[in-house]
Length: 605
Image 1 (tube, rainbow, N blue to C red):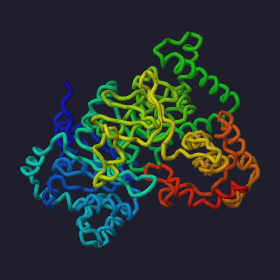
Image 2 (image 1 turned 180 degrees about the horizontal axis):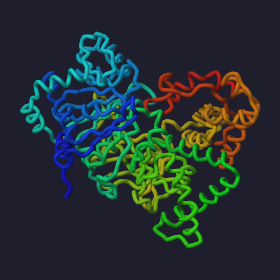
Image 3 (image 1 turned 180 degrees about the vertical axis):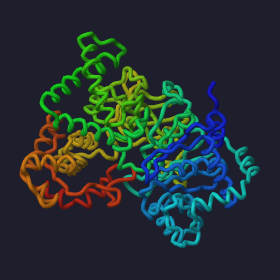
Image 4 (image 1 turned 30 degrees about the horizontal axis):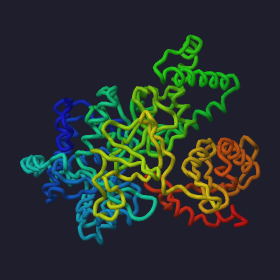
């Protein structure tokens, strides 16, 4: 019988079990080397910080903010909060002052942990006007405190806990902990309007741990995980908690932009990621194939065909492939795939959960052909991550689906085609938002996901699109934009794509080229340019993208086909307001900001 999951005692229990063994690793910014933090040290730091929180008069059920990139101190802060029966409110490191001000005011935060200078400065800006915020703790030594009243270094804040351990008070707080405790408020960035605070209770996490201990039973404390996505994201947060309770050592990655360099340093056995990561891996492999001598290209393509047959036609269904496939796979394809995986740092990979957006069938199949164990799934903040996923042993998964529903979660499809959820992993609602709660739940208590989809006879779930994202052309045809965007973004020349066409005669698209691929392509084709604005107006470049669109249109219905497109010089970014913190397109914003470019694609409207 599994022991009940408890956040407030997790570190102490694991420290007793593992002691000096590494719980976390962090990468030193100067030496670029990875250093361990033992279970004993992690627990000790969290207890010291808990003592400081008691000293600062943090009450039971008080909200404490963590505004930081991925650093070990953010994990320490989380567990210190749980030790004193406080509620962790994580915030995306890229959030603006207005977003942080809203969260602080909405959840009445008194203390914020700020990771780096950017976060510290914004928190201090909010501190000036907030009625509740009184302390900003700078978590990294390089932060300049600017002489702000209420600003304090991590070292000095920890010193409060060292001088005043408050051991008895912490023990009393732990006695208050129960499975009904609200432990997190996770503010969803939202594609429209103000963020909503998703309430996650201990019972949500306990249930997700229980089910995952069963469905991911092949993982153990010999595994290593790369903490790549922001810990504010429920996917990484729940995954990291899962790893910690399994005794899996977690490499805390601070440098998301440098992940391609960092992965070969660590070579983790597990890592959760969004599809964009694997799209880049796919593009890099394809670029490597294209730049290889013709003989090597033929060898690659032959090996990939073998991989499709062996891994998708046979291994997927628990069958042994015939010798005509198995032998050349073993001696030709597998060694080649291992070299590719080693370059990417995924050669030790045992399981790579992926969710958060649509993973194209083409890339999904390709990764499995190379025997990269991508465990595709679907989830939401409101479902404490996983709703469904592929079998962890990579058996009987169906390309096109997002896997089977996890045990004991009720899923049904409404008459409008919306996916509805009910179970212990589902949020109790949005903090301070009775209006949103009324809209979010059906009369019989099912949560409305906002996603359209369907279930097959074997309990596999298929996502068609976001209901709110679906648009209708002037001809009355419904279009699923994410499907089109994912299809076009699969191409090596495309970085980002946004489908347009609501109440228009046809579908068009705004496309941001992947300049790391386009510029070398242009040089190889003898194209010269003085700026990217000039490059994307070059007739040969436009013709190359016309070819991309023509290829993607082949498998689409006539009303879905992309008739026109516009190449953009600069990418869609969070800073410019085009994207949410989870990199989803803010369609209303994009339609407003690029109205001129969009109107130019409809000259007769």
